[in-house]
Amino acid sequence: MEADGFVSRRMSVETTSVDGGLTGAAAGTDIRWLGDRFLDATGGFVGGLSPSRMGAEQDFAPVLHRPPPETCAPVEPEIDYEGLPQGAATSTHMLAGAVAGIMEHCLMYPIDCVKTRMQSLQPEPGARYRNVMDALRQIVRTEGVWRPIRGVNVMAMGAVPAHSLYFACYEKIKFSLSDAIHPGANSHFANGVAGCMATLLHDAVMNPAEVVKQRMQMYNSPYRGALDCVCALVRSEGPAAFYRSYTTQLTMNVPFQALHFMTYEYLQELLNPHRHYNPSSHVVAGALAGALAASATTPLDVCKTLLNTQEARAIHVVHAQASGAGGVGAAAATATGSRHISGLGAAFRTVYRMGGMPAFFKGVQARVIYQMPSTAISWSVYEFFKYIITKRQHEKRLRGDRDGDK
Image 1 (cartoon, rainbow, N blue to C red):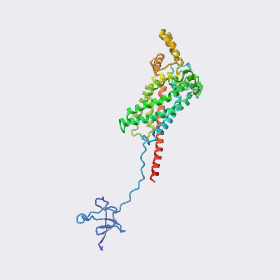
Image 2: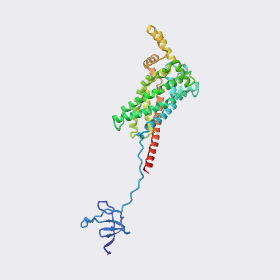
Image 3: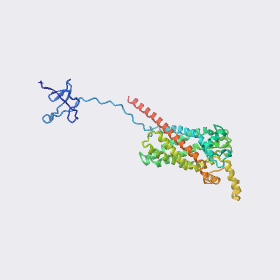
Image 4: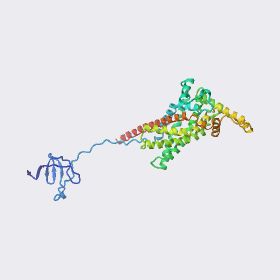
């Protein structure tokens, strides 16, 4: 039926592209044609014929009726906890580092006590142990259940500032050097240099606490507490006693931390290439890095322990051997030399004289057992708190941006 130019027919229309087809009409919809326009059954305009092609192809004009676009919730950018908000990075690293330092030293302190005992060059008869577990059992049985953690308060007090500076310095130098050497990429050289520089600050703060801690960890330690130990050291040996092992500590910790950080970052590239927050990768990488660095630097740790503790029996044997050797030089050295061992060279000679090459690896088992979980705890706690703090800062910044847009 045709009336007033209208042609009504049932059409089966396929959805076509905007290049020249009719869309929006389902198959079987009643379509009416008025001139060069199409209307649906309700009178709504659907489309039309392209005027320039009326005589040739009956091409359909672009559709005006289009389904409303889907409303998508705004996607928040993924939090990159490696890239911290500007102005808050240093405080975040310092806070996370302080918590990591306390957890590391406090949780593993009993094993650290055993390590100090097992590195003794001339142990007392009551302080001779077969292994780490035997040492712990004997210490608890003969000296009390709290003896393995005696002096832990000193380490906790020292760990807060030391580890805050340590991680903040490491992160700052690492990112600065990495951007200068390989922009946007990780640099093992930058990691090693950052670890070495961070160690200078860490050991400057931590060395006095290490001296007091190891004096209190020794068998039959005469000190009632940390304050009594500090006062006794100042009276008998002077303030220099707190830094007698500083150069040795640096000589040990600089290669230790360089190897430690380079190994950790390398393992992170293998286990966690996208550098997302991944607790298992932080634990595994931290433990393996700590074990490798600890075993490689054990000889220096033995010398450091000797310088910190100034083991009386070892000093007595050294002076007795020097006196028995005879000669003006030996007598002069015994007479004029102090009753203390100072310097890395003197420590090396003493250790070798007391036990030969095997003496340099005394306590290596305890050191590795201590460092593996210690570094795993340190890295996992540090990365966790860095992630949490960064996430909260990120969310706070997004809320501020939304409020500003309103």
